[in-house]
Amino acid sequence: MPNERNRHKKTGAQTGKSGSARYGKPRSLTDLLARPSSPLTTLQRRARAAGDWLTFVQAVAPAHLAPHVTSAVERGHILTIYVASAAWAARLKFTAETLLAQARGEDPDLQAVRVKVMPQARGRPAR
Image 1 (tube, rainbow, N blue to C red):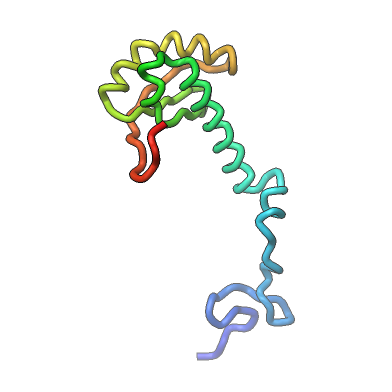
Image 2: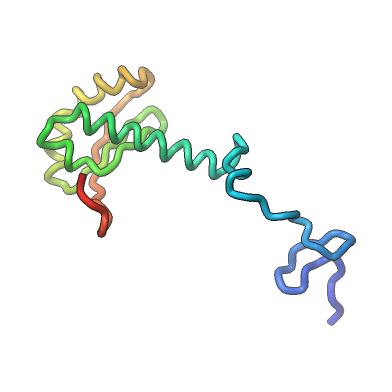
């Protein structure tokens, strides 16, 4: 079977006339993060926003519930708060309207607060 021209022997990637892969030189992570539309930049921005929401929720939630909040994420104008167990979720749902009112001070476009269960990962210290 003849070898297809302009294809890399092992990966099947198209190559240029020189025989090198057409994808070009590998870029450094710093270069990838500097591009505004990079998937890594988007991921970094979302992680930073999630950390900010977690800090905010733990600050405004009742003192006995705050340590059990594991994460908080805002997507589509809905703030989803994750807690360690179903028991803590039930207790936090009673304060959801108060949390929504306070969260609207940070983002006026928020429409709702959801509470879901997401236990902490193993090996991760409790806050």
